[in-house]
Length: 142
Image 1 (cartoon, rainbow, N blue to C red):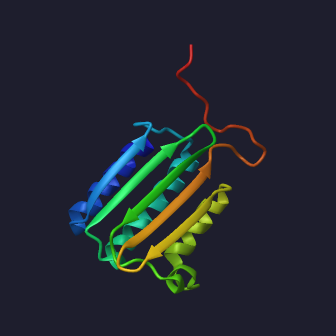
Image 2 (cartoon, rainbow, N blue to C red):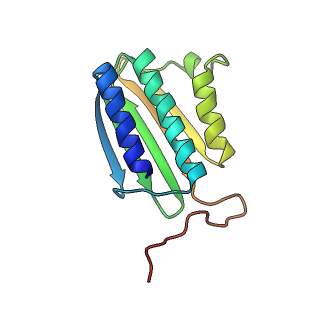
């Protein structure tokens, strides 16, 4: 599932860079349709790439949270902090990709940098399509 994939990718970041990763999934196992799972995972991969290349961070906190309406991925690092220029630079293709992926599913992205304190990337993706039909059904019922 998505939670396991995010946890695996966080371990890869830690092993490659030494960045300590604290991961919380609420609930512990989040299962979405393939499109949403892949989109959120790819967004997380790009976030990890940015941490590895640019942040100079020693720690990252990762929260994957599911509510009845949406899934939120929030990644906070303790690095140098992204600047406003970097956030809105049209040559920041990774950030552009994050935004495009989220928007393609009706989601939104918030990126905030605090100089010498770190960066926070928050992505929220609705669990239903544009017409409101739920794409993920609860299969655990009786």
